[in-house]
Length: 90
Image (cartoon, rainbow, N blue to C red; front, side):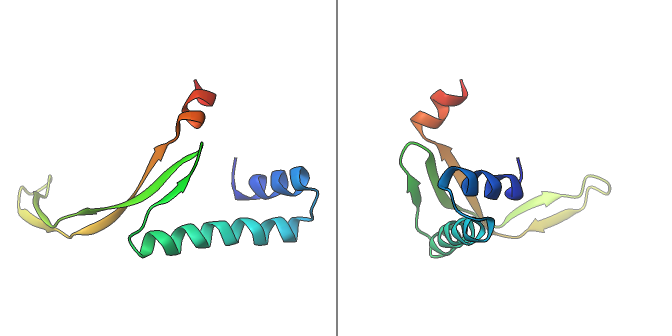
């Protein structure tokens, strides 16, 4: 399922047109992005929790040459499925 399929499903289930469904989905996704960018969690009860984790700078090796390289620090987005979502999949 891709974004277009999700938009079609929202439009069908909510009885709205595709433009309104697109706006609604984009609004939700933008809200999640901006909240995560601020370093906060997003919890959708029954679905799951999105959070940000920081990975520190570390040393690694180039597998081809064996030379030491520095891997930059970065923030990662994590998702933990909620109980209802986990049960629905199993």
